[in-house]
Image (tube, rainbow, N blue to C red; front, side, top):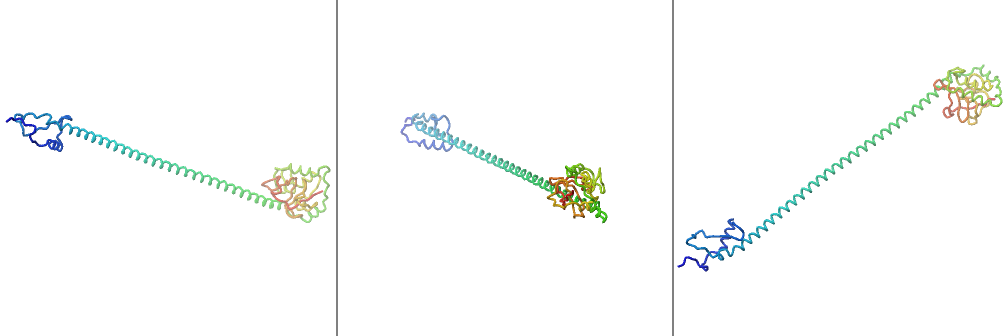
Length: 301
């Protein structure tokens, strides 16, 4: 009998052998050529098999393996690419969130700083305004106090300088003739003389030329117009024609206190103003009537 096996002899299916090799992980060589041999046959006992018979079914299996491997590789690459893309997106999202948080924190800090600066400026402005108001109030209070003290000192000084007239002084005032004003401007002469003394000192009992008291100044002013007046304010306030202050004309005599008992006298110079020797602190000044409102006016001559 020939030792060459016929092609029709029954053998185990090579498919199961290939499947076993696949499960066992033994696949080598170039795709399309797979050689599987029986471990029990020797080279002398078993001739080479028909190539068509031994390799006919494996090229298809190699194609399947190649296709499957290619798809698996592509799937793996796709998975890796998608994983990298997802991770990149997640990282970008995290970075964007952190950047937004940093920007928000910076904006909040800037807003808080601006609000604090605005509050500080408002507080400083309010403090400055309060300080200015307090200083203005202090100035007004000081001015009012100084004015009150000045008037009080004026009344005290003038009251001392113009002591109540004695009976002899009153009699003298009644008997002293009043000369007529110089023709052509007697009152103007009174006003001019009085204004020429502004700025000179006040001294109780002084009758000029460098210092005056109130009645010494008025007496000298009228003397410049040719009119003789008594020495004291009380006697002077008892002379002439008494008129309201609102009707006074330049050159009229103004008095403070009662008529015949005045404690101060001055010369009305027009436009609501007068000239008088007020007190040691002011000397001879020109002031508005509102500064010290007189009690009445006298027209002499």
